[in-house]
Image 1: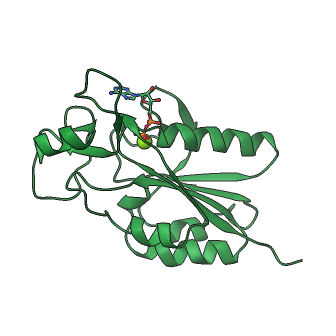
Image 2: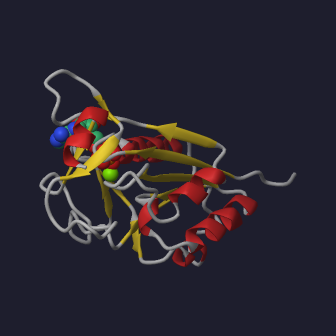
Image 3: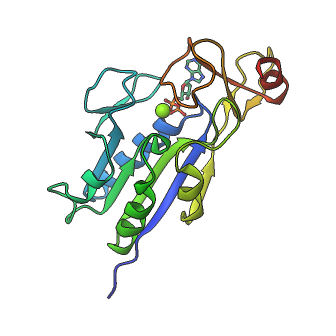
Length: 187
Ligand code: ADP
Ligand code: MG
């Protein structure tokens, strides 16, 4: 029987639980005996360049650091892998799109995570094209950092650093999750 692959994508602002979700899916698949390969971009150096996914809660799960998604297809364990996890997918260049298509054709179950939008509320990298080829999209929300009550935060605001570049890797000192009202305060 022909293998059927698919791509599922998890999007949201920063601090929404994207990495936590990836880590949990990775563990569930491993428990079921599947061979899981996780990849993250070297560009994401917030936790140094160690070979782990890091959630903001301090959870970690091993992965492979790559510069380009071409490296996934030539990984020594690619042929045997059932599940391919790609963290921070917006950081990879546009060939991530054709590489994911190739992985789907190869029968892989691909899980991507990425930012739903930039701090300017524009799409980043190839995330919009990845969404277009995904069979399932999960939108996660964070909690607005500036609301006293619990309000869902669909957006990320840049509170320091350079304004102008779409991509600047940063943490809590640079970006915070915000609701509609507080996004406009920083816009
Ligand atoms: P993402 O990958 O979407 O940035 P993570 O999965 O790494 O998110 O982390 C999500 C978790 O971070 C939440 O479950 C929560 O426990 C924690 N968190 C949420 N908001 C904050 C915050 N403002 N500061 C620190 N940790 C937070
Ligand atoms: Mg994350």
